Every structure is written in structure tokens, then in C-alpha cells.
Length: 255
Image (cartoon, rainbow, N blue to C red):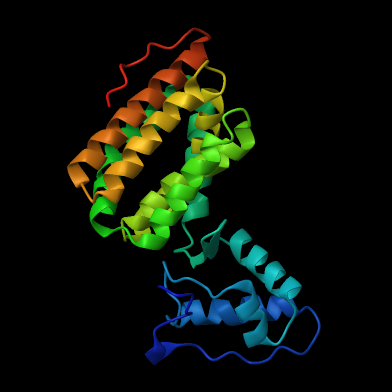
């Protein structure tokens, strides 16, 4: 759902002003009721924190606490710079299960994650090239700029990298895709952290991010798919080299 509206005009929920103690719990209850009644559906975006505070007649702190509680319940997901979205409630369960599988399997789990990404993300990128909106393009451009300035700051680079890939998933226009990618964010963050253990890993990542962005900007699905495939192969090689403690076998960078 676009423009921060809670639901289509025909079914938009009407909220009661909250006046008693434990305000955030009442906000949570009203939003839960809207989800149960179908007025809010997976993929719908909540209004801004300021807008919600005005609608409920409470402080932004109460709204912030309510969103935090909804996130803990797995009913919404909050994305830095993009907003808060209704989920189907399964992302957290999937995330925890996948994280456990990878941690138990360790190196094998990392290989499985790379294989999964190779199966999913090139096609996601191709879809995004045909459906992307300017707002998400702007998010991806901003993420690339942040990564350029954070090549020696792993925390900032990794968060911008995640923003780039999640924006790409959102651009595909299918809320289930975004939910699936979000379910492996913890695993992706760990995989990206290992890239910093390999000399030149972040720089190679940036080379590929810029190729993907350029292909997306040209609305070229085949080129975008190929650019994403090359990027994931680079990530696999660097991640594998980090795990075994040796220099990576570098694929030739194709312009």
C-alpha cells in the first residue's frame, strides 16, 4: 500500500482516541483488530509515526512503543528509511528456523544460503527492473553512496548493503518476496560481515552494486539478472575464502 495509508479508502479503519494508561497497548490492540478484520493486510504500510500519533491522540513515544510491540509479535516489520509494513506473522518464525539451521550447519549452512540466494535474487532483480518506482530507486542510490563512504566501516556498510537488497526486493512488487528476504536478514548480515575479513571484499561488492543499479535504472531485466548473478558469485567466493582463511579466487570483473 502506497503513500502511508492504512487501508483502501473503502475499508480504512477508524481509530478511537486513546485516553487511559498503558497507551501503547491500546494502540497495539486497535491495529491488531484492523489486521484481524482485514482492514490491514500483509504488505500494507502504516502511516508515519507523526501521523499515527495525531490519529490516536497520543505522543510519538507511545506510538514508538506500540510499533516495537507489534514488531516483537511479528505483525509488522520496520525498515529504516522506508517505513513500517504489515507482515503475515510468519517472517519471525522463518527467520529463527533458518538462523538455527545455518548456525548448526555452520560452513554447510553458509553454502546453502549462497545457493538459495543464487536461486532467488537474480529473478527478483529482473522483476524489480520492470516494476521499480522512483522512490525505491532513490533508496538504492542512497545505499550505494553510503557504501562508497563506508568501505572501512563494516556496520554502516552492511546496513546500507541490506537496505539496497531489501529495496530491490520491495521493488519487485510482491510482498511475499519482501517477507522472504526479510526472513533471512540476520543470515545476510553475518555473510556480509565475513566479506570484511577478505582484502578488497567491500570494494568488489561495490563494483557489482553499481552494475546492478545501472541495469535497474535502464529498466533492463536481463542485464539486471546477470549483474545480480555475478554479484552473488563474488559474495560466495569471498565468503568461502573468509571461512577457510585464505585469499579469495577472484572472478574477473566484467564491465
